[in-house]
Length: 342
Image (tube, rainbow, N blue to C red; front, side, top):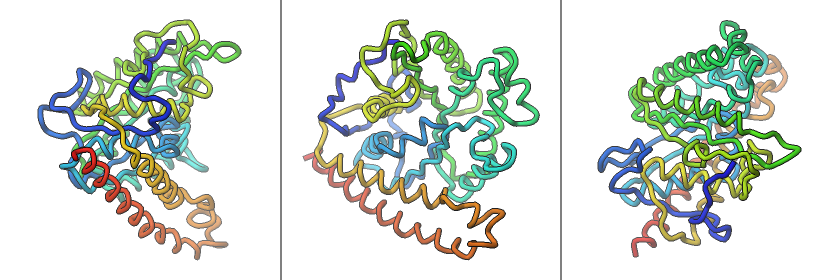
């Protein structure tokens, strides 16, 4: 598979600045002169491994933090990705059925009250052809059926998840963005040839575009942006993933740029301070991860809380530390954007 070449993102430029365009790209959900991100927005990223791993390098959030431009301030982001997740939220369940995972997602959405939600699902359906990709009792058997049955179950689960997110977020929710997954990458033998997987993923992309339109959600086509419509059997000349599926840091750099373009932002000259911003974002994400998903949750909140449940009172102590990092992010952001205007 041949993917887009990162001509705008040389390796030495480890982070890039973005500004709003006056008019959107062809696949952008941005409308007229209304900026996509607005002052005070609380942004949530929801999805599987692609989203969760983005917190470790910070490129995606850095792109949007700067992309909002100097007229927007007070942005806050929460990465709610969970590796292996499905639209039924299987991976978010620790010991029970997917309902436990859905309850976990609903809880954090209700607490965070996001104004913008980015959703990224679909690869799980493509990679599980002929096998059940969910343990949801009413859907598991059908998910292992024909391609039409499996994608039908996927869209059904997506619809229900979207409805729950809108319900829990309430009136604070202004924008929902459905993101088509990027294509899988061919790295040569002995790794799998993903040509057929990408054909199926293109069908999922088409279905998601219709799904978003029907449910009053915006749509960003990372499949097209990352070269999925030009899939080839040959090994990709540029390596963006470790194994064809999981993106490298360099891959996330390109992915973040393409995502920003999909929202109506364009690249301009980089600034050395963007690397400090990115590192501060990574640290903020690390702190929030331990706040939201403490390693000893079983002892703090679940069936072994009788042993160490008294320590649960320490978890909210992460909040003021996270807020301090967010203040640093805002100051760095202002400094970078002010410098770019000068």
